[in-house]
Length: 366
Image 1 (tube, rainbow, N blue to C red):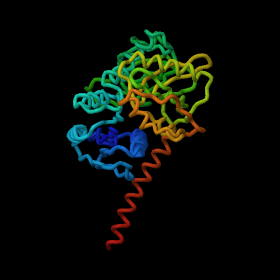
Image 2 (image 1 turned 45 degrees about the vertical axis):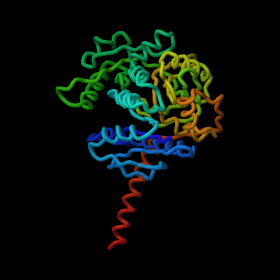
Image 3 (image 1 turned 90 degrees about the horizontal axis):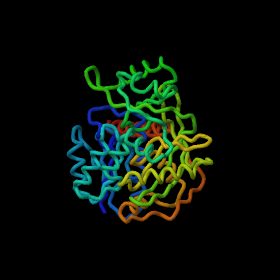
Image 4 (image 1 turned 90 degrees about the vertical axis):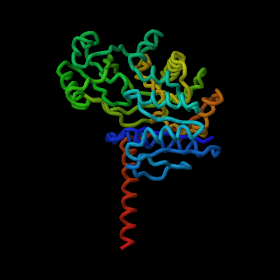
């Protein structure tokens, strides 16, 4: 097949906006990893799109299409139409992943991931909470709030400490931890400063009861019916007024691993259309695995997971989506870690090497 692999930030999806450096580093690392795995299959023609402003090392794809400024919609639509299948890596924020997914579905091309309906549900953290709560799955108590009137809309009910986050955020973007009433005002100021400016409505936010425990995730393969948990992963977090994701380790040895896997399987059954690779975020206490979020897309844990198995995970994704077939099991050898700091340093190093190459070329031309 001809497979178009699209990572939103690297593919000029933000247009005139400046991408946060950490998200750019994670996006590029995931793009490079999944492209390499699809290319290793040796059976398919791999095409990627890349923002013309980015100057990374060459991706292991057969073709790289540079996206000119303002050309995102045209290039994305054209590449969808020209290829047989599409693999998407994009944020749920502002419905981006759902919209791109729906475009692929309407084109009639093979979507190598969850359906747009599944993405819409999983991307809405309040809708996800209601599904999990109604199914009696352990999940932090959650309320949706008006960020201009938090005290009325949930703080009194949940008490402190509590988490505040956008209803459709990605990663640790916009996630705050308040331990007392005075910190609420500081959080609101940060939110107002980060939004689009005076006169624009603030995004929808939720409040969650904060659960003390180990931050973890589960990586899964889904074929639309059956679910194969691949690994339980440690998430390294910096806990403060604003949470920060620092990286992770795969796998995480924990006595509640099988319980987390069971909760993940049940959660998948609640959302029709979850296919391919899916990630779920957990907080693990001494007695329970609390399911916090469902990520209907590739996650950064993939970077470590792929290094620990002989199974080509890109091939497993193809088998799950196209053939409805999951591997019988996955064997992991050892452990692997990654950090956002190292990913960012690698991206910057690529850019510096490219700049040095250009300078050297100019020197030789004199």
